[in-house]
Length: 364
Ligand code: PMP
Image (tube, rainbow, N blue to C red; front, top):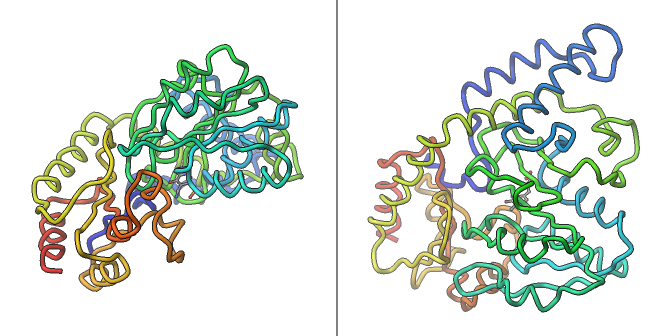
């Protein structure tokens, strides 16, 4: 099969898989146990934390491990909000459901949530965002890279707007971490999420950068793990493998990014006139492709029958029959949105696979 759904999840790197198995065998003691094996587990956990911190250029204490970007987004946003009396939140209408559903809930709880408009190029409209800033603004939450279009969001511009305002800045970095270097301190980001299964690590591990000087509320009550911010025995083996996956992503970034860029260029060069790519200023991994005259309800199963794995919108939205809200927010018609597939490239893909995909697509 031809797997072109890497934005939904990636195949674990072989080296990471081997290391994961090794860790499962070796470090089964609980990092909270005080005996020597427990202490060894603890040392490994803290090493992994230090590795991630150094890659992000932040303090070790700023890094927490969770179960994924969904939990990290919830923990960070609820945590930051627990530290202020201000009641207004600014976010975009193209966020992942782990942000949008939380926003719905927060609005039920009495917060005022403002949704910034999206420009036709797929970027959050910074001018529109400005209009909502006021003395009651507690937090701004905008993603780094959109998971359906791959469009890079203007995090740097937003960061400049928020400098010295005391407004918390949360960034959902699930589609960024491991693909591009990012410096949260430089950008004035208070919290940022990442997810190991998006960077060729195992599922079920979230990396959360959360400024340590903000003593946030817990989401789940229990033990004092993760600097008393995230209770429950750490998913140690998977965390160690995730830190290794991130280390490899950074170590190989130059070559691997060049490879994805080349696959992207190749795919674009092969697309016929019946295809339009949605959005601008995209990362090379994700392409939202409108296939004129087609509907994803028929296109996706037909591609699947040919062994081609792509998605319509994001995997998290599947099951819903309505058009992708992200594409609608960019100004696409319902018909255009419903004819758009998401193709997401990964390190394991080849040009031959792209040839096969294009060949099948053209025949549909
Ligand atoms: N945010 C974005 C932008 C994502 O793409 C995803 C993954 N679909 C998530 C959050 C959730 O990540 P996880 O699967 O680790 O909960």
